[in-house]
Length: 118
Image (cartoon, rainbow, N blue to C red; front, side):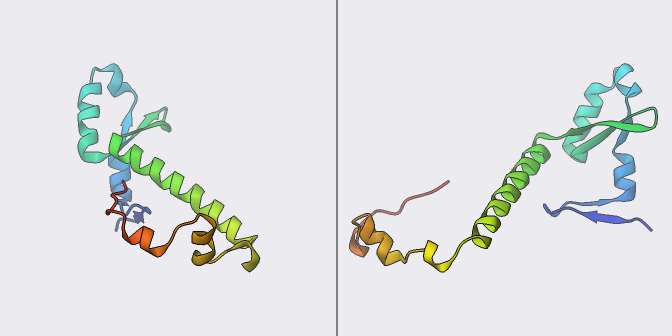
């Protein structure tokens, strides 16, 4: 039976999938780099092995981007958690107080065309 590992991004990898993603560094010396990189579109990750030890991980651009996004999200979550832990009710103002402070009314907001945020 395969052990199953599930990542935050929903990607599921079995132990056999991890083993299948391992490639010996000697394959690069044999001119197989092109094939290895082509396989990334399917496998998303390759673990390069030298002397039976992992020495590098090759990721598809999509996997790399997802991991970077997840890391950034985790940093923001940690920062927000610290701020919320060290804040009190006195650190906040109501929406009405904020709108008054920046001199804007509900009517001003309702009169603005819809804005698309990326």
